[in-house]
Image (cartoon, rainbow, N blue to C red; front, side, top):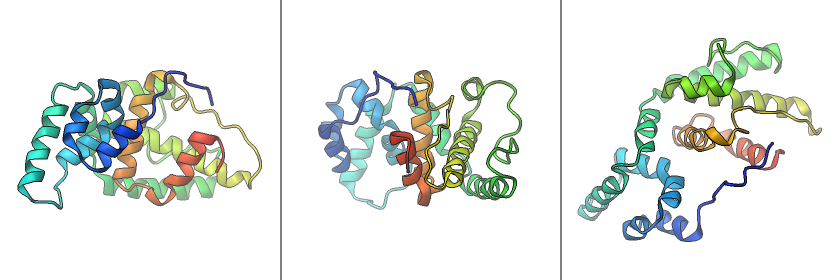
Length: 198
């Protein structure tokens, strides 16, 4: 996979602020630092909390204020509104189809035939289709890993190697994990995407 020199990582300060839901510390983060946490923050702000206390209600208001005006929030909100149950069922069917027909098959339940390349299709797609495109690509990678029997292989991914779509693809990965679609296998996927091995 190609190297992305502009790739940023969550700082220990930002991680601790997120882990402790320290809204004051979160508010002090720079825009690039905050961007890395957007999927988590948006989900936290929109999903029904287990904590019904007044202090959480105040923190949630501050988080919403932090998120207001951030352009990427709208696309993340759209990702969260997808029917994850149907997506998970289609992903399961896709896995079975890929296993039955072999990994090289162009057949897909998650996405119909691509009119353009994967990255162009991703760019022009709405949120539900973006989730399906990323999930289909992940399943293809997982299938290739399972077929390799531990042997080295190279699986190029136009979508995951393009720095232009890296933030948006990362948002989709975060939402897929949060939506529990294939969450049991996500550690294999992340290991592959980060290291090229499982």
